[in-house]
Image (tube, rainbow, N blue to C red; front, side):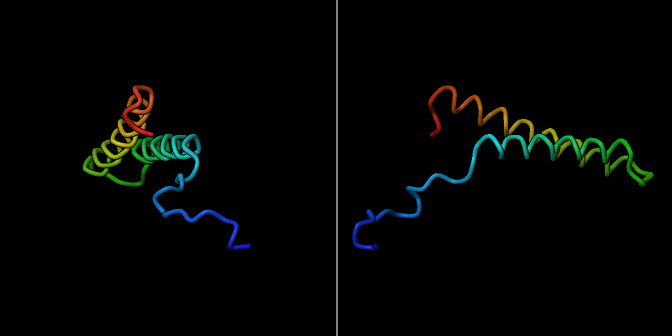
Length: 74
């Protein structure tokens, strides 16, 4: 019944699973690097963007892990 459930704000709910989000980001970064290595393009601009975005994803995952380990993020 709705009367027995506590009233909570949407920001009090935890978003998704952290571990699956990290794994998904790392798998996506690996796919981007593979696309840079075996793409059907001739120029190097695409390679730079793909590897740059992959590196950014990895840095975000590492930064999130460091912040959570230090207790600066819940």
